[in-house]
Length: 257
Image (cartoon, rainbow, N blue to C red; front, side, top):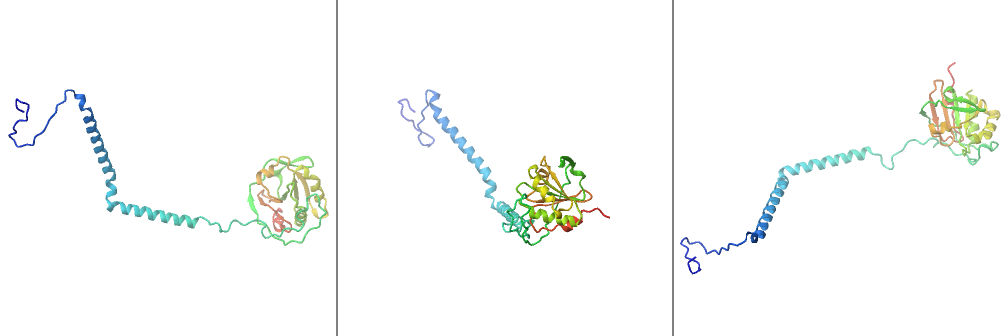
C-alpha cells in the first residue's frame, strides 16, 4: 500500500488480495473450529475407505460368499434328512394290537363282572432297573423287594378298572407255576383280596405299597407288570388290557430245574 492508504502497484503480476489482520486472536475461533471439523471429516472418510477396501475387491469377496452359501445349503440338506418329519413313524405303542374290553368300565371291586371276548396280544416288554431296596407290605409285614426273584408283580392303581385283565393274568401265572404279587395302595386291599381268593388266581399274594416306591421308580400307567427273573433282572409292560398274553414271559421267570 502507498502512503495514502490505497493499494500499491504489484510488480509480480499477482492478483490483488485484501488481507485483514484482526486485532484480537479470539476473532479467529470460528475459523479454527471449522478447520478442525474439516480435518475430522477427512479422517472419518479415510477410515471408511480403509474398512471398505476389502469389499471393493470383488475378486476375493465373491468366492468367499459363494463358499459360505454352499456350506449353508449343504448343512440344511443334511439336517432335513436326519430330522424326522411330522409323519415319521414313532415308537411302537404297547398294547396297540389289543382290543379294548367291552366291560372296560368294570372296577377292581366288581370282580364278579363277566369277562369280555377280546383279541389276545403279546405285549412288548422293556428292560428296566432292578427292584429298589425298600419293602412292600404283605399282611402288615415288610417284604424287601430285592428278595423277590422268579416272580411277577402286578402294580394296580386305585382307578385301574382292570379286574378282567388281572384275573386273566393270574390264570396264566398259575399255569406257569409262578407266584404273583398284587401290589396296590392300602385302600385297594379288599378288592385285591377278593381277586386273590378266586380259584383261578393260583399263587397270588396281596401286597401294599405304602411308600409308593414302585410308582416313583417305574412310573406305571394303568395295569403294569414287573417280571423279575431268577437273577433279579426286571422287565416291565405298562397299560395291560384284557386279552394280554404273558404265558411265555411267566414261564421264563422260573428257575432252571
